[in-house]
Length: 106
Image (cartoon, rainbow, N blue to C red; front, side, top):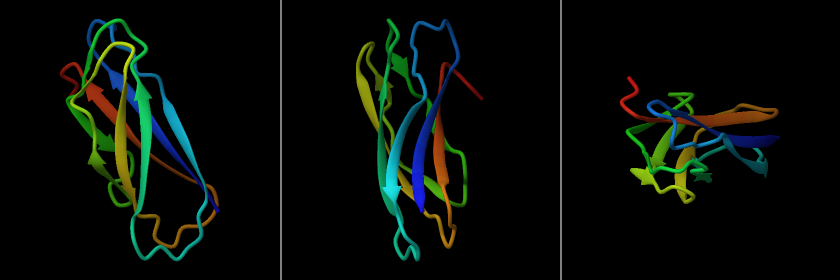
């Protein structure tokens, strides 16, 4: 089984900060999964302004937890988002993800 970790960034506001989608391929991982899988993604701010991160929201509440996320990412800089993945008995190509919310997003 191959697992991919995707991180989508949703930034609201004036658009000066830009966090494009980032992805990491975790390669082959085989069940059973007795412990959560730790994974991280580096997110680059391609914009001209600092990206203030209000919160990180996992795409799957039952299989993904946010271990840590930066509070901000400077213009041109990177930030690491760490996730704990709990795929259970899932098989096949899996995708796990989270969205970073900024700019007063609900």
